[in-house]
Length: 290
Image (tube, rainbow, N blue to C red; front, side, top):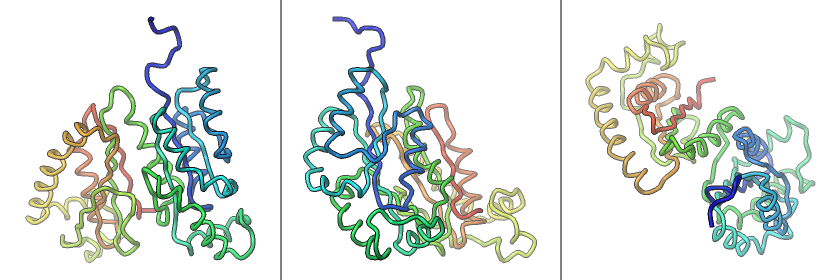
C-alpha cells in the first residue's frame, strides 16, 4: 500500500527533558520548541504513551518534546519499563540537566521561587537528586549547566537536533572554556591549550579576547601552536567520517585554557573555519567570554 498524503516518512522523534529544578529544564524545552517540536511540560509519566498515540493519530506533530520533573515522583519507580517500551517504538532521546547544588541554591534565591519539594532548600535539592536518579541512569545525555548562561544552554540543546535535517550528516559543537572555572561535563573530547604562550601576560592584549585579530596573530605565530593545530586538524578530519559512519548525530569538542578568554577561543575560531562544510551543522560556544 502506498504512503498517503501527510504520512510521516520516519518514526516520530521524541525527546524527554528532565533533571534537577533550577538547572535549566525550561530553557532546554523552549530551545526545542523553537525547532518546531510539539512540547508538553510537566506531563505525568503514566500519560506519555497516550500522548504519543494520540498525536500520531491526529498527525499533530512529527517531533515531540516532553518535560518531566519531580512533581511526578510517585510514578518514577516504574519509569524504566516505560522508557523501554518507548525506545522500541520511537527515536527517543532523554536529556538530563543538572548543576552543582550551591549554584542551584543561588538560582532559586535570585528568582525567589520555591523549590517544588518545599522546605529547606539544600535538603530539597538532595531529595530531588535521589528521586531522579532513576531518570538520570536512563539519560542519553547528561548536561551540567553550572557554568552555562541560558543563551549558551539554548544553543547547545539546539545543536543536538539541527543536524537531523536531511542536508546535514552531523552537528559538531566547538566550545572554548577556562579550566579555572571548571571543565565542562557535556563534551565528548577535551583538549588542553594551557601549554601555549599566553596573551594574558601581554598588557595590550589582556583586555581583548581570542576572537580579536591581534590575539589570534599572537597565538598562532608560535611554532608550538602551529604544530598543535596541525595535529588537531588531522585528528578531527580523521574522526568526523568515522562518527558519521557510526551514526552519531552530534559531537562536542572542548578546548580549554586557563581563563577561557584568549588561547582557546582563538583555537576554536580557527578550527571552525577549517572544518566548516555543507554536510556539517557547526555550533561555536565561547563559554567564559561574557
